[in-house]
Amino acid sequence: MTANSTKSPPQGGSRESPRPFGSRGDLSAVPLVVLGVLYFSTVVLLFLMALQQVARR
Image (tube, rainbow, N blue to C red; front, side, top):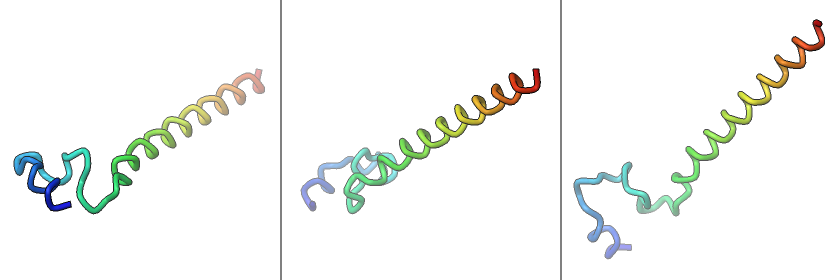
């Protein structure tokens, strides 16, 4: 663990580093899951609105 922390450039910062120490890589997957949920929710909402418009006709 100490070797990896010393090799990482100090300019990058802990947030910008692809593998922040102590997170086990879980934090890197969180934004992907959030984006996936938001995308899925928007698709479902658009689909429901389309069904409502078709039903009104």
